[in-house]
Image (tube, rainbow, N blue to C red; front, side, top):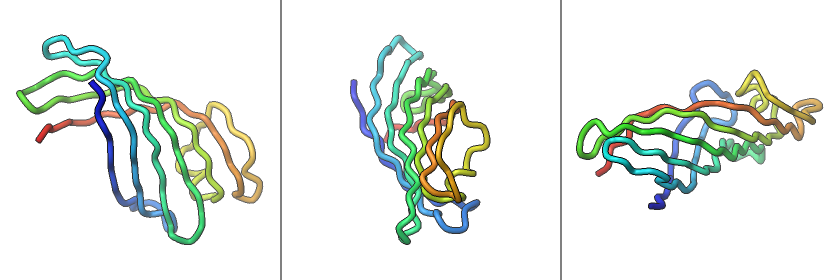
Length: 123
């Protein structure tokens, strides 16, 4: 089963790129009783409305356990790519597996591993 992902948010740590958005697709790879294995491919971004760029495509593998009829908990690893033209965007993550560019905070690119965890409530 394929599902859509949409999100909006606010980054309290940043001074400029504060407004967050997310869009993507997920797939239930395995659905065995209370256990699910999901994969998600998302595009995440931060916006300042002043022309700066922060984009983070991400792939996540998320095992999930059903707690109740419409409630699951999930946690798992993600692989992320970041492209940004600001020092603020570059500093959002500290340890990159590989990175290049970034002279004076411009045109930075990097890969890193991360994780996601949360609670899903189906309406």
